[in-house]
Length: 496
Image (cartoon, rainbow, N blue to C red; front, top):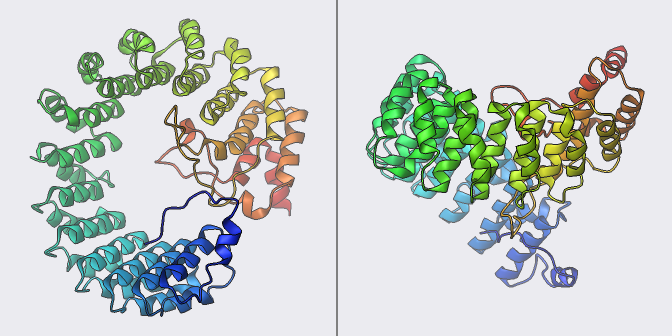
């Protein structure tokens, strides 16, 4: 197995130099592969492909995992051969690597691996096929539904769910009858990808499943699809003694948005468990009804930061200009999640009086708060905000390809990719400030920023603040953000 990535020390170059891939010790050869991939030093796939034939299974497995991390389609032919390796761990790692690379031509060999004698290999092959989501794989996946190992059936349910109920409903329906709850849960999620009435009806029945994890899955689907017919059953689940399923039920009721849930949400917002209160307050915000305003406002002073943060976010939906003072007070909260929520709320409510204070949040050391401030200022008309955002556009950098979230903060327990979203958020915010009111300063700064980017960088998907993320809408590219901000850029593209 590949070790967890770690921070290299100052002695790392010397240590790597003592670990050649040709060392007679297998552990050193495997370590050489891990380190070369970890530090981005692979320039030639040749040594990794050769390592797939190493006499030691651990080295072959490490090589397969490394090729999957590199996602280079040139390795697929050699990996397909490695699917017949005598060692099960190597075959499993190879199937996972082929799925990570995602080359459609690998579908056939992965379907053959569904008949492998080793259960882990069959499960990895099914999960790899999930990445293709190709309806042509349904017959082979369907033949594996009765596999004696539950982990394999669970992987098959995930793969069929990715393909979608429109093509795989009959197979997923069979998995709904599986005796193992985690298999039924994945089948529920798979069918729940569709909003068709017959598919929602099939999922709705599992709100009464004897297993909690299946009921939770059905509640999550009901919320995602805003299935109003599930509201009576969801309200009934709130009367049951199982507290652990309540968060999913409360969030689902909020997303569905049926006013009939108001009294229940108000009641659960006073629950002694803070993690239940968080979900109830979030749901009141999603419901957006004025009846939840007093409860949400009260929870701005909850002893738990997670509840205060949820209340601040919810106030952006149920609040009014009269809540300006309360939200400004929340900007002084010790926890960044509360300041972040209050910042988003001020932007949603369009409270221009808060602009001077929000500009101070652009200096917050926590990237999530800064990201929220950028988004909020993009919704407000303020000359000072314009100048600060233009200045910030020249300071933040676009995210690099594959850039991951930083490690969690030890004090605040936050781990997000907000830092990599700042540049795109500034571009979008400045574009909003120019709508209907052309601003030479903004236009000049956006043109300068765009000219510094390559076509590859412009054509990647934009990384936007949370309020702009829509699961039911396609994500715009960074190029389209610039063209929306300055329509003349799109005209120049068309002319070219």
